[in-house]
Image 1 (cartoon, rainbow, N blue to C red):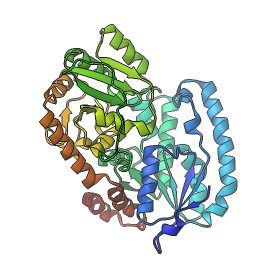
Image 2: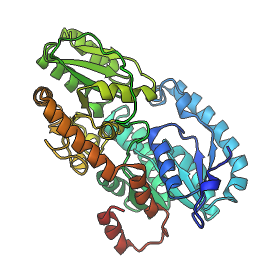
Image 3: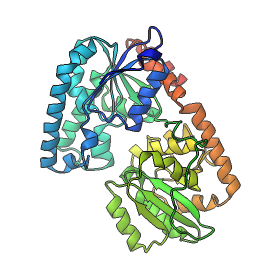
Image 4: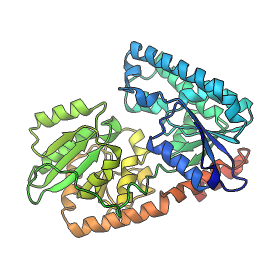
Length: 407
């Protein structure tokens, strides 16, 4: 909990406090802070981790006992944070609340507002979108769903500035909390360009045995509805072991169902692996012939460009992902990726089969890498974050200009 990067701070740059129970190593949090450092902002951190210590982050949405246990942990964390907060606020100009931070905004946001420091909220997702609409863990229309929606609205209204990862998600947030006076700045998710770099010397992660001509197809993630893992498994069944060998890495909500479907289909060309160390992911991407994005048909899936897609872009990989307005802002069909309809195993299988052409894979990968360098490097994120540090009283009539310019 000490001051960081003070020696490299640019003169007159605002001092930032990263505050809350956020996950420090989560890519969105790490990259947002890296972008601020690239602007020359010194960053102090006041963090009591809670969420990364949960064995199952969805358990509180399913079981009251898990919710009660989480509540106790959060109360202890907020007691610690509130004791230390006044001294830290005296040193900074801006407070950044990162992912997941909705409860942090509720517990800590009012104190930050009273201190007259600018409050930036980087939610990445809304709880309504995630728990009610996308993952469907909480029935819509009920008391819990209404409470979650209210929590989203309060968190968005408390912030001076809200960061959204896509313009589509920014529009969703505006519709969710239309009376919020927060200014929304779009900052892409991006990727750690030093870790996810084609120039790195990478060792082979050891792909499972496969037919000589079979393409190596990689997916990794948390197996949520947005990812559409069922579509991936059904595409694997259509292709068969002679044409493609799939590795699916990760665990999550639909992992058990997906593996059960693979057994039902008698798949011989799909291997399921648990989580691998984050720093090993570039090796898997580099040795894959095709890297998969998301294929869910949920509304949220149409609004996002996930971490895995930016990471594959940074590596110069041949990418197949679902078509959507959000992804069309960063990738072009048949030029920098293959974009397919959502929840369409046949279309996914056809796209993978088309990528049996090594030259085509190389061209797609090179174009994807170029798109990353233009849109999602640390410096590109820093340029977008510059807007979040502007005067929060920017007139409403100017907001459209800022967003259209993409700054």
